[in-house]
Every structure is written in structure tokens, then in C-alpha cells.
Image (cartoon, rainbow, N blue to C red; front, side):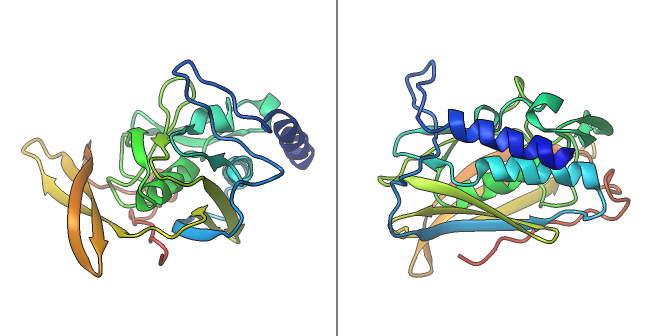
Length: 255
């Protein structure tokens, strides 16, 4: 039944997402086209993390959201919206109820688990030099990514949005092998610099963990520019609400 829902949803998506649509801010949305603007594909960035293979409903949502995003192209100056692209998480669009972290606790919600997808997309976007327009941290640290590098989404409330500030069209490419999700940002021309992410952590007086994330730009191994991309507060680490195991982070893939 879930397979049939997935196929039906993807078919509807292909029929409706062929042309860009103007947003209220006069910014065209990303699109999927049969004739790609990207001819010679170069990987600008990639990021990956693993998920628990035994959580069937959650993994269904992860696979569905990843399939929807695969092949989406973003032209220069366009802004990508995760919520607008993936759509509302409802049974009618193929999503099912699964565990999700809300207000620091675990609840079963439709589309539960897709924050893993948005978080990996966020890191790939950072590493490809995209301009982050909107991003929110989780209410607690999550088991699949380092603190300060997560991006929660909630349809109608919290979105992940970033702008393609490059001079070339880029494409989101997703793939899943076993229990590992990989997100790549590809284009036609390699970046003329390297992008690195790092975080500084400190414990606040009230026991909260402050995490400041930086994006560094380098040429020939030398950093020439640095910017703060987020400044987040989390409760001190505890056992993961998803797996019952100590929290651990995902690993960026080599560029």
C-alpha cells in the first residue's frame, strides 16, 4: 500500500513540477525539468548520515522526501524552500505517522523523520556556498548530526530556505544505500574555493549548551574568509529519544 502511495505521489509531482512558479517575493521556485540546465555535472558538495534501518515508517518518510528532492534544480538567484518543494506532510501525499522530535519530546506525526533529510540538505547547501535564508535548530540535540548543524522543519511553521548565489544552476541529488542518505549539490563548474564547517561549544551558566557554527572559505589550504552561520542553544546532552543510544554526529563526505 505504501509503495502504491509513493508511486502515485511521485507521478503527480512529475506532472506539476516541470515549470518554475513565481513566489510572492517574485522569486521563482526550484524546478525539475526533463531537459536539465546542467550538462557536465560537477559535484560542488556532498554530505551524508545514517538512519536506523529498523524504523519502517520513519524510513518510508525519509525515502519519500529524498525522492521528491532528487533532481530539483535551482537557478542563479532563486531561493529553494524545503516545505514548498516537499509539500505538506499528509497521508494523501504519501507520508505516514512516525516518531518526530517536538518541544524536546518524541511524538508520532505525519512525515516524522524528514528532519533528517532537511538537515543533510542544509549541510550540503552550506558546503556548496549557498546563502542560508531560513533555518531552525531542533529543541534537543539529535543523534544523526553534530549539534549546530541540524535543520528542523515543520510545514507552515519552520522552513529550510537557501538562495543560489552562484552564477550557475545547481541541482540537488539524493541517494540512499542501505541505511545511509547522501545529498549532493552539483553544477557545471567546480567552486573556486573550498568550504569547511566547524563549531565552537561552550556551557552556559544555566547548563545549556551553546553551539556557534562557522563556515570557512579557503584557497590552497589557507582560510581567507569566515562567517557565523548559526548560534544555537541546546539542553545538555542526554540519551537519544530515537534510539536509546548516546548522541553522535554524522560525517561530511569528502568533496
